[in-house]
Length: 288
Image (cartoon, rainbow, N blue to C red; front, side, top):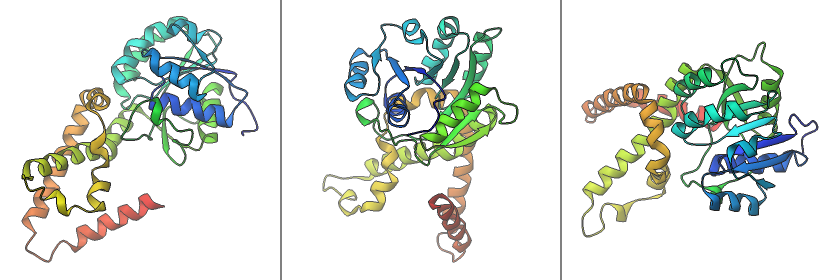
């Protein structure tokens, strides 16, 4: 349990995997904070209540925002963009509004328009946490532990509300990374979106190569299952991400293609030791 309480009432807009996990984490580490939820899917919202993620259910967004000093918007990117105007109009003047969108440039542009001259403060955010399975059923209070959590702001001179949110995020186990929207979208294009598409491409190759005897999958080991974990993610989760970060993802795919071509050209040589060594070092960094 955290020593200090940075917020008193939190409205979670979207009670799926990320919103539900955040709500569960708040309930675990800040049990005195009131959490109210709203979701387009009434069944998901009810399951969030049954699981104890939210204490109250709101009938609409405006009702959820009433009295909330933190608004946590955990919707797909396109839905976040559409929700910003009504949230800016209904949020308490002293509230902090933050989102979890996987791309930040488009959301940031929309937020600047919607929150222009408004008292509520908007903070772009993105927890680098998730699972291949979506929905409140997969929500976990410890989902954010040891995960990077991007905040689209400058730590120096940040508003006290932003500092309070950073303290909350740290308390639930995440590691804050401060950056601008452009740096974020370029980075996730390489370390998140490219691995997702690589997993999809690998699965497609295996499917195309498979025959009626069950091969080659009959010889697959745990390494393939580890590599293809991301292939279990539904397209509905990734559609908006890829559309709104297509330039960065396209560059990442081109760079990957160049690397694959280099590997292909050197398959019969003894000159790939350097590439394996570099890959080993990256793996070690991630394991720290």
